[in-house]
Image (cartoon, rainbow, N blue to C red; front, side, top):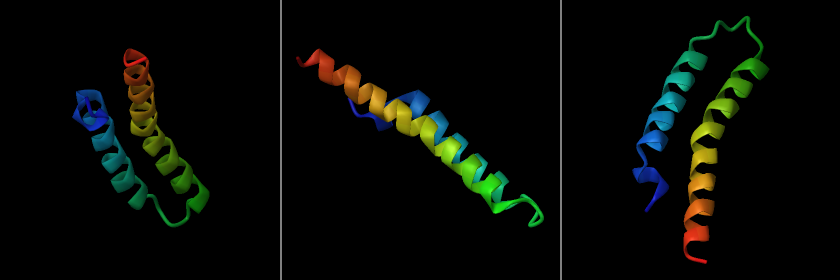
Length: 62
């Protein structure tokens, strides 16, 4: 099973897109660091799911 087939991964990937759109609308008076932190946090969700499923599937084959 590929992690990209997981419904939870698809939903969190959609969340990443929403966060990026939100971050693009943060006023320029806000710190750039805030935008970068928000984006990194959003990206980490589906990334962690992908890493986790790979580990679970690897254990099944051992």
